[in-house]
Image 1 (cartoon, rainbow, N blue to C red):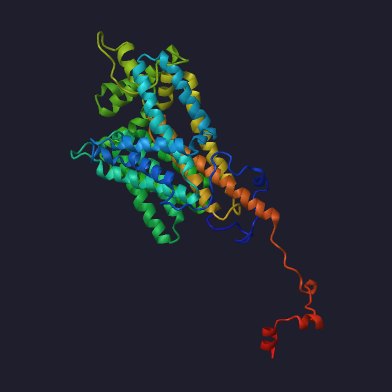
Image 2: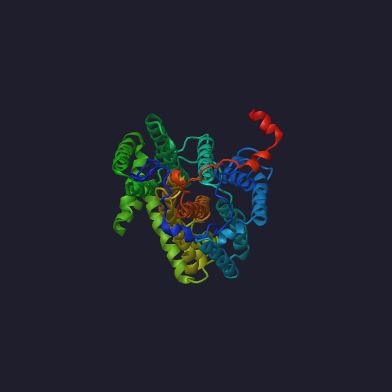
Length: 494
């Protein structure tokens, strides 16, 4: 959503060439050289490979069919080949790319100090082959705003397919899926991450009835999925997402955001089962005193036990960070270190092999405080890159400025939802953040290029027509010229 939905600013003709005066001084291809013209989607080979990667990461089809044929490995190897053979590696020179490659380098440095060097080495292999490749291709493959929009729609379609086909046959109290990211918390992250892309479809529609239908059906279905997961952080993340759209919206859009919030809250209170509502109620109790947390744990309820366990996991992550603040316990080694080296509550036993349920503390405990700073820098640079793209796509800055600004707000909302979920979940390897970061690089690159072209055309100005009185008057031919005229012309004249 954005304050203005018309095709041009008030008082400025639709064909005006007014643009940001400073845009002309910006290099057109600062990060990854590419044209801003609409690409032939089928023949854009990096875009086709990116599509395969997105389907593999989000739809996860080969965890249900052809599971033993290593097809995801083949797709990822093709992605690595595409990164090496194209200029995609220049994505590391972008604002999000610098802290991301810094995090990768720091993890390599931390691996010799890991409690299990083999496990950390395998973690690095997967991180480089999956997450980094996805980021680099998402930043280099799109050649236009429409390409970025297509990638967003493919993410939406792939994730929706996974939610529809990945539900286990047995009925659980919480909404779970089969596959790698099938935990209820992962499903809540996946469903909420799709909300901005549904809103993007609504923004691109012109028919008010179609807008209302897609908004209610699409967002209603995704919010119901989040509610059925019983994931408490989903409520906080939805609230943060709605605040961002409220901030960017005009008066009508802000009223729509408030109305949808009230309607969604009432629907959850009426439709969700009591066990899920009890989990949501424990969200606020988890911020209260230690006595209340002990009472919740003694109640022997699933919600109370979950709150108590989350508090213990956070405490363990802080202990690991304090013990090894520089190099951490090793990339990917939080569960293993907790199981083997932290004192269990029962003598002679082990603590549960479980992640920290806080991405930022997970990174700080595994890669130390320097690793956490790199990770925070990666997320922050992605957000501010999207903010710069929004400023570049001001009214009249390019022919497609409206789509560019809508894409910027959409990706900001998806990133905000992810960042809030990361506070209560372990998702440093989830693909959502790397797709958003790559698309942020592509969006800023294309926005700078288009704004520079538009500004250059504005500075050159249109070619002024020559007044009629200054136009040359045809002179009569002289006798010599008439004699030299071809005979065919003289015969035609007669």
